[in-house]
Image (cartoon, rainbow, N blue to C red; front, side, top):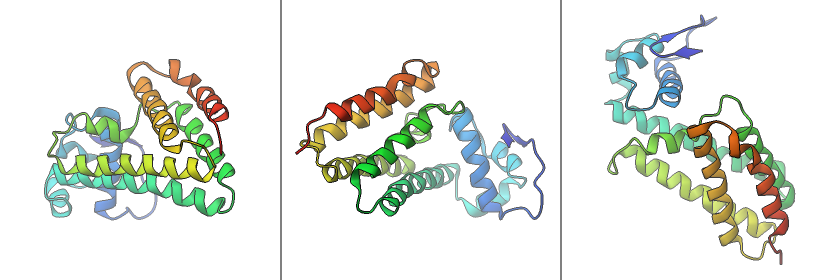
Amino acid sequence: MVQFGRTTEGIEGPLPPPRERILTAARDLFYRHGVHSVGVEAIADAAQTNKMTLYRHFRSKDDLVAAYARELAAEGDALWITLAANYPDDPCRRLQGWVDHVEEILTNRFERGCAMANAAVELQPGHPARAVIEDYKQRKRENLVRLFSDARYRDPETLADEVFLLFEGARISIQCGGQGPASRVVKMLRDLLDRAPRA
């Protein structure tokens, strides 16, 4: 486990490659402390390397933040691929799988909001990671539209907007004030999906 500026547990066996260690350390530190408050020295220290090695793999901290955002986006995209592979001919089971995923996130005691949204609020509009985050969020909405369309909801676009805002808002609520209202979101989400008219 990585703490601010250092590792707290020994790594058994050979160390992963430096780039992998740097990204792992950056992910942990950025998520727990924010992008701006974490310097490259703390990341290099936590990754058991040095700044020279970090800059060999990432031209700048901005480049590292963009790589961090790309890695998060790839993991988010992989969820939809997994759901499609697990339930290729059953959009209703695919939808249930996604709702289960939402519940798992919102009830995780280590959850402190969406890592991408947390980063986005700290970044200037022209930052290279902003485009990665914005593209990912757009794909996420498009995946919801496709999912609701496949499940034969009558107005998948509107439903996708409502569900997207409900989920994103819950994660922001967790970041700002703990589980609180967010603990009721899964029930609200299921109720919304049950009430929404289908073709």
